[in-house]
Length: 423
Image 1 (tube, rainbow, N blue to C red):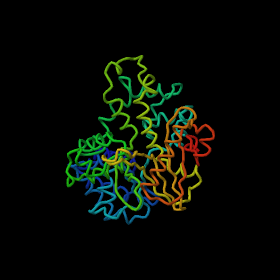
Image 2: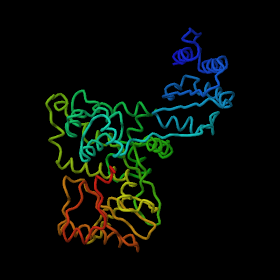
Image 3: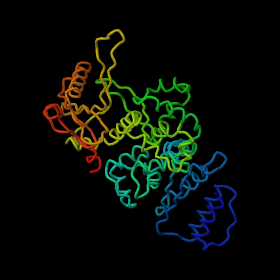
Image 4: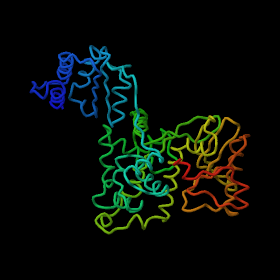
């Protein structure tokens, strides 16, 4: 890497002339400094270092070299801009953004590269010539998330199910072995991060940090809080507290679409499926009970990630809110009581609570007497157990909306559809 760096210096400043290879990063950055001074560079000069976690391996003096270069000279040159990046987000945060050493408080701007939203995913696919409707794009999003590298594997002329089958359930599918490489490429102590993700995949509501420690065997004093923060920064988990009026508490849940999909579907798929070039495994699995359970959770996570779009759709973009799921489980000795679960509660500062029922459903959802009673029972238990006095509005979040009938008109205050996520 040091030799390649020196070659770049030669190409940029000395027309490719051979240079004496530096022995370490300290001398490499001194070579750069000398080149800039020798060439009397006055116009803006950008130094862009990509994947610095791998440049700054444990046995290199990279951090010492860049620290010395920047603090003793480059930071005082008004025409020099230093940009560093890396996919191992935790390393960048620990060693650069939150540095306790020579780079402490030196960062002037951070750019956190987030996955695409659904709307951005559609624009990206359209740019690549992929013409799928919103439902098909959402099906793909529930497998890939908004990761451009994964989206690049989508082929034109194939349905969402066919593309998923090709990527995840064929021998050379791009996402078949991705999970096993993912954590090793992003984190040291990769096995501990995998343990946490495996634990979170087992319960859709997620766990407290104490529950995660118990389930994984990682002690509370064993950096588990740091592991969780690194996973959150890298986009694998979200910190979403259950709705409890007047109380605070952190719950972590798995939010990375690909990881959850892999653990639920790809990890234990048989070799006979992967080796069959004519396999239609995913097409056959759609609408199975397991598919409905998985898609419900995956769509729930998508809704949580797109709360701004939900708020816009129901006309409260500028209203301050807090959000979280809610669940009531009756005590064991109270058999006469019924439990209740609400997918998403949006507590608004305009004296209203929006209770959201989330359904990933093909076609328009129909509200019959049984479903209406179930929804009214949820709201009744929610009000009774939370002691909330605010007005409660019922919001239905579905793929294509709700069929209008006397029950739906009377019961539902707002409807959000997939189209609202793409606007």
